[in-house]
Length: 312
Image (cartoon, rainbow, N blue to C red; front, side, top):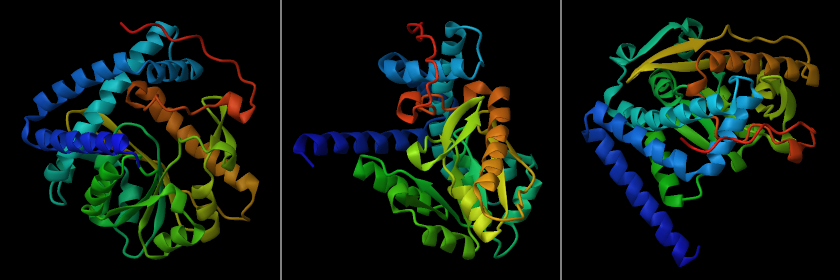
């Protein structure tokens, strides 16, 4: 690591620690106002992410024009800033004895039943929608969770995140260290194996329609379900307001039969369909800035979306 990069990483780490401390002591309303202001600055300073987000919304046909798509994209930037604030606030406010005050889990009873069954490991699938950190913290009160995640480039910030997760019985497996044996051990030990399904899987994935367009989708969740027979369930958490959420889960998937491509595809199509439904209902709560579709890399030959408009 070069000295210049080390200094930059240390500066980012110090900034993250200061921001974390401020968020914990500031009134929630003020912290959210600052987060929204920061999101507006980021919107103007990151034209590439702004363009990707707007193009993705147009590809999904969730807006009639580029300007309408840009409005949704900008709202998603503000939502993500609020997501960071509330996830940090939840560390001290959400507890085993009061989580019902923050999360309405009326539509997630099957998920709670799995989490409250001793020794029952299962696979939980979600996407970058709503708030996935607060319900994960709540679920870890019932059963330890393990998720697959990419290491951050900044090693100091990465260690901070790792330590924060472990404090809530939530461990992370770095993406490059994932093996079938590790995932099998998570399930056999009665933990929740959590996977985010909407990241681009490159050549390792299976092309599954997402909003009608083929998207390279990770197959690990479906493979582990078919190999072990443990329950698989999709869940998403909608933000209703400051520190108020509604957790929704689909019926439990129990797929009989052989482990083949057709079975994997059926599971992934079902999961993508569920994710599409929650996004259509609240498109501003989805993380649109990541490159979900990569037509040039995947050789899909899909047309590009119209260019994004300039920022307001």
